Image (tube, rainbow, N blue to C red; front, side, top):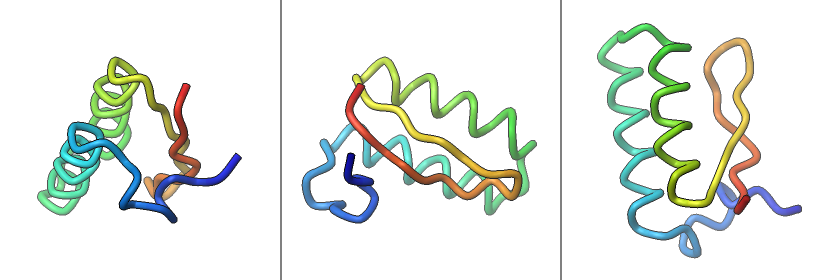
Length: 64
């Protein structure tokens, strides 16, 4: 399945907002994995999910 991060225009507005907030929080220095899990759960309530690596980089955004 295609990573929707590579096709950002098709991502619903609310999902984009969650991911944008996640990026801002990570820049602000919040606990990286706790913050990612929080926003991942928010994205999942919208019907999408993603994975992340040990550096906190998210990838594989897809519809559930």
